[in-house]
Length: 109
Image 1 (tube, helix red, strand yellow):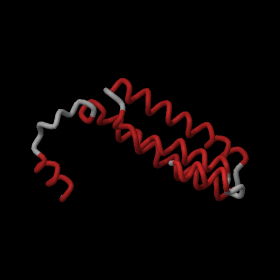
Image 2: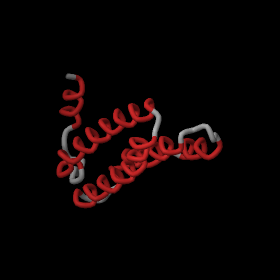
Image 3: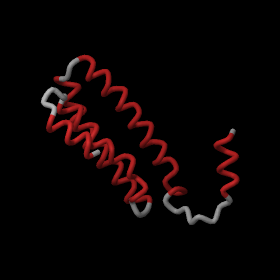
């Protein structure tokens, strides 16, 4: 995240809105730091709105390649958020008592 932020500041040829989407979007990977499913929903909504702020700027004034990139990024972000939200009751309340062999079998299949 820091490397992207620094690249956006140093390399003036970097598209600023794209760099801001990257920087804000990295926060989607820190969803597991929220304590509980109510805060998780709020957190995901906040990050999504931050990404969409710069994403909508790309949609309005970006180059065609940037627009196509953002639509692909937005599709990934939407799927990522939906995946976590559908499972938030289980992943936020996990206590570590389940047998790990079940998870290993699931991922192996």
